[in-house]
Length: 323
Image (tube, rainbow, N blue to C red; front, side, top):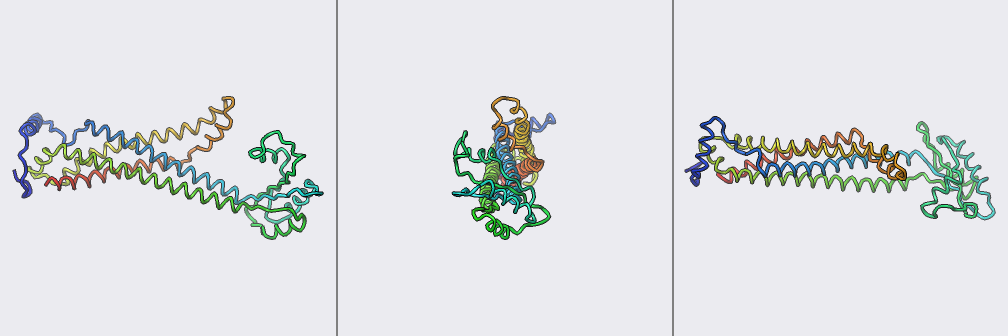
C-alpha cells in the first residue's frame, strides 16, 4: 500500500475486518476510544495538575492581598519610642511627647500604649509574668498618618528631640522594604511553580497524544488511504483531548475552590472549640477573595487551552512522522 508517495505496511486483516464490520452496522468505531485506560489516567493527571496550579495561583493572590494590607497599615502608622534613662521619668516624658505628636499636623489617633500592651509586646522575647516596674521599659506611642495631610516626619523628629532628647521616631520604612522583598520573592516562586505545573501538564498531554496516535496507527493509515486530511484526523484527536482536559481541569479547579471555601468557614467552627483560638486566627487569614476564585477559573481555562493546543500540534507531527 502506498500513501502520499510513501510505502506502507499492509493493514492487518483483523483491524480491517473490525472496521468494516462496524461500518456495516452503522456504528463506526471511534478513532480514539473514549474509555481507554490512558484516557482515564490522563484525566486524573490533569485533575491533579490543575489542583496544584489552582492552589498556587490562589495562594499568590492571598500573599498579594495580605502584603498590600500590611504595607498599607505600616505606611499609615508611626511609632515613637521614649527610651528609659537614669534619673528620668519615662511616663512624664512620654506624656510630653504625646502632646507634641497631638499638635503636629498630619497625625491623628495619637495613643500611649499601656503597661499591659507593652508587656504583651515583650512576651515573645522575655516571657510572661514580667514585673515591668523593675525593668527599663521604654514608653511607646503610636499614631496614624492622616489621609488628607502628609506630615513632615523629619520636622517631627527635630521637634521630638528638642522636647525629649531620648525620643526616637520609627516610620516603618525598613519593615515595609523587607516585607516587599519577601513578598516579591514569594510571588516569583509561586509564578515559577505555576509555570512548571502547566508545563508538566502540556508534557503529559503530548505523551498521551503520541501514545493514542501510535496505538491507532492502523486506523490513521486507513483514513489516509480514503483521502482524509491531516486536519480532519487532528480534529478528532483534539476533540478527545479537549473533553479529557475539560473533565480533569474542572475536577481539579472545583477541588481547589472547595478547599479554600472550607478554609473560610473553618475559623467559625474552631472558635467554638476550646483551646483553638490561635489556630482559628491563623486559618482566618486564608479567606480567599473573589479575585482568588477568578484566578482558579483562569487556571482551569489555561489548562484546557494548553492541553488542546498541545494535542493538536502533537497529532500533526506524529501523523507526518507516520507518513
